[in-house]
Each structure stands twice: as C-alpha cells, then as structure tokens.
Image (cartoon, rainbow, N blue to C red; front, side, top):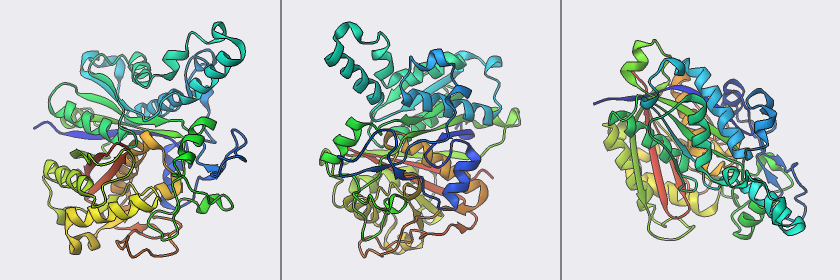
Length: 412
C-alpha cells in the first residue's frame, strides 16, 4: 500500500507565524490569548481571543491581490507558502495532474460578509464589491492555492465545523493511498474573530467570560473552565507519497498513518454524553494505522475548555482505550495556548503532533490549576514533557456531531 508522509509544515497562529516561533511558544506554554484589539469588544460577555499579531501579509501576497481576498484566505496562502518552502518540493518540475489540494474551514469569509452587508445597508447594492462572493466562499482558498502551484489534481474544500482541517488531512492521506495524487497540500484556515462571529458564539454561551486574565482564559480539563476562546489562523501541511519523498531526499516529519471519522447523530452543538462517536473515531484511526491501543503514546485532544467537551472527550478516550490504558496515555490540549481555531484547529494540531514526534516533546496543557474528577487523565499539566514518541493521535470534534481522528507515526 502507498504510504503518506508529512514533508512540509506552515502555520499562522496567535502564538507565532513562523514554525520556529510557533513551536517554541507551544512547547513552553506561552499563551497567545489577549483582549481583542481589532474592534471594541466592551459590549460582549467574552472580550478575549487569539488574534494573529505577527503575520506580515505583504511578504506573501501583493497588495492589489490582498484586497480581493478575505483574511481566512490570507492566512491559508501564507501558511501554504511556508509549508511549500519547508518541503523543498519543486512544483514547477512536477506533473500538475498529480498534485492536489484539500482545504478545510468552518466559517470562511465572515469578515467580508460583514463588510459588504454594511455597504449594502448604508450605501446600496451598487456599492458592494464584485469580489464579495469569491472572498466569502470557503473553497476559494483551495482554488487560490491550486492556481499558485498549478495543482490540477483533486481539489476541494471540507466544511465540518471544527473537524474541517482534520478531515482535509485524512482525505489527503487517502488520495495518496489510492494513487489519485502524489502530493496534496492540506489543512485549514479560519478568521472568525469579528463582531458578528463573536456575537454568534457569545449568544450560544460557548465562550469564556474570563476577561480579566486573558492568558488564563483557555483552561482545558480544569475544573473552573467556562468556555472556549476563539482564534484566527491557519495550519497547512504537505502530505506526500513516501517513496517519492525518499527519492528526492525530503526531510520527513512523520507518517500520516491512520484516519477515523464518525458522527454522533445526537445534537447540533452538544457532543454525545457518552463520547461514543469520538471513541469510534479513535478506534477506527488505530485500526487504519495498524496499531494497538498500547502503541499510542500521546493524544492531542480536542480539549476546547468547555464544560461538556472536556468531560465527554475524557469518557471517549476511556472507552476507546480502556480505563487502565487511558490513564497511561499523555493527553494534552494545545488550545490552552493557541485558543480554538475552529475549522483550522486540526491543521495546527497536526503540526503540533508532527513536531512532537520529531523532537520527542509533549506540549503541556497550561492553566491546569484545579483538577476535575471528570477529567482525570494525564493532561501533561503546565509543563512540557520530554520523551520519545512513536504514535500520536489528534482529535477534532465539530458542531453537528462530526468526529475526526488522525494517527501520526514516527517513520522508522
């Protein structure tokens, strides 16, 4: 069977927009959550978010073209360019029909929608931009990436809320395995920190109200967690067929070795209380990757810092692994540092898993100060842990009951 590996990584996040700065902050537990600066959040119950602060857009996209794109596309293109550079793959010498793009986002161009609606109501329909539709639609990021790198193979967008980027990477692995592509650019991007985005999630009562200490607001698995922190950014990876990567002498981070996806079929926003769907996704990923539960060293949890998710995900892990084996696992949530990048989260967390395998470092769950008896696994509290890693899982669970689990394996 053809095998898929990661040969390039690019990130744009609240904790860094270079791979080095991102990984340094994640492994050292430095939070990227601050009071919102893009607009005045005073009227909102949640006033904190993970905004991207160090991304030099001019270095990636000419200014004339920037105006034709939404910020979620800006981040996607920036992260993709960094991943391509990191991979050292020569796209000009490749066969375009063997190159694919699978991209995920949960919301897409909400900023452009807000801006254009304001123009419509204040100045009339003739003032709306002719670029409004391509700015908004989620698949446009996949199209823009394909245009830039001449990727004429499989190209599409995945929209499964917070599981979007993980589904995209899982699909990329399957495209490699089925010989439909030799290389796939995959991941996700999101730019939801807008007045409308914040209002929508606030009215759901899904967000934290810990406004006085932003850096401490995201606290997965902690007994005093009170909601997630919304973030902007992108995580993109180059998923490549193993033998091609070896022939060209590529630096290989890890193998994308397994993928599981299920649905709770339970509720539009709440996870199934027993975690059955998430548990099945983990079991499927392990079976697909040819590993036993005892082979798994680390799980990068979905770990959103909401009361329901963290308790339910803990139950799911115990169901998938058995209680004794679950307690042996290291299970951390890097959303404690980055916040929740919604549809891009799976891409950023795939990067975390690849770097963790490379360096033998499990990043911490920060702000873990009050143990919760309902979340009683080893969440690697507050401080990173150095240890060899062979197999990692990454969970991504989305509104609508969408569950995705990726399995990453160190390449021997």
